[in-house]
Length: 115
Length: 112
Image 1 (cartoon, rainbow over the protein chains, first blue to last red):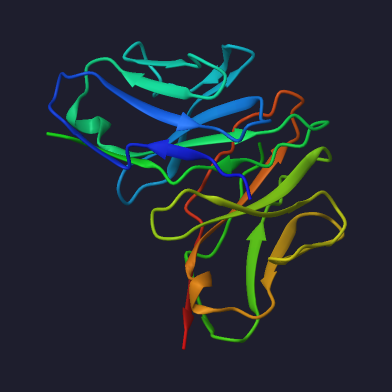
Image 2: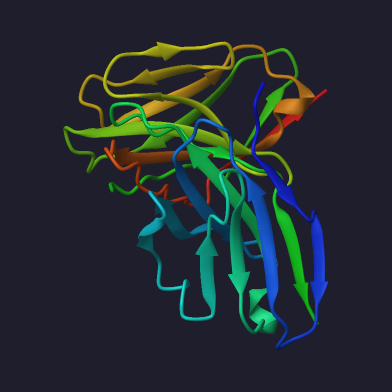
């Protein structure tokens, strides 16, 4: 069964450093998302992406964040200058384009630890 | 998207049916009920969704009341691997596939 994959599974970085989290969505999916979950808290939406542009973003997704689909398979989340509060699990998700059908498939996540 | 209310936790005996309730009294006519679950910090996993008819798939059944103000997710024969946080999400189907808004969910513990 096709699945969303994410790399790395765990990333440790120092405050102020840039990090890139990578995702490979399911191959025939056209809509892509990033969510995050701070330890013990809810899963929070960050951004959705379609047709090479951002469809929607949350208040969390400020100028420090950016997304890109550099080729036909990868979908990346970049955090330009990490802060301690960016420590969280980051989940990528994708969905196919049915007629309004929007079941989302999530990856296993990347645990980001900012020290 | 309509707000949902779920009990914070539930227990279920292994092999028995787990019935997880969700209230969504402000649901509007074009909003669907989705269920996802999250097993111990893994990525959320889609379970099932419905509009007004009851739905069943290989994982679960979804019962939606006639007035659509509440629903119940049924895991017919719960196993220890079904221990997870279960999220009920109400949202409109989007032609551009909008986001999911997760609440606190129900932590289901399946006990031997």
